[in-house]
Picture 1 (tube, one colour):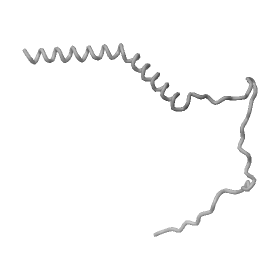
Picture 2 (cartoon, rainbow, N blue to C red; picture 1 turned 90 degrees about the vertical axis):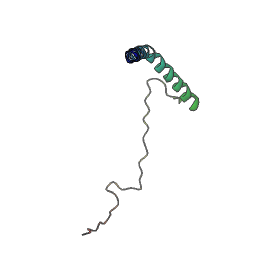
Picture 3 (cartoon, rainbow, N blue to C red; picture 1 turned 90 degrees about the horizontal axis):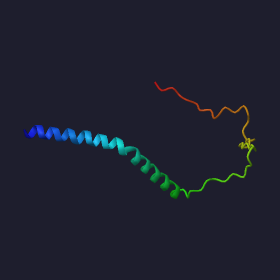
Picture 4 (cartoon, rainbow, N blue to C red; picture 1 turned 180 degrees about the horizontal axis):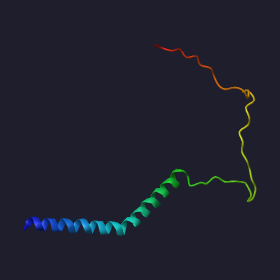
Length: 84
């Protein structure tokens, strides 16, 4: 009789926990996400980079061409020796 009682309560606890987890999981996940977002804002100062670009304006940033390298340069030559 004791074994049946244990199995009954174990199954009751398992399914009860499973049911409650489905109810409260979205709330807990949202709470954790909000907490992490607040910590990240505090760590990085909560500042967003300010753009002085007006709406509709386009700015293209390019790296300047380095004139010290030739166009035909393929890299450094390395001589390999075969080892038998």
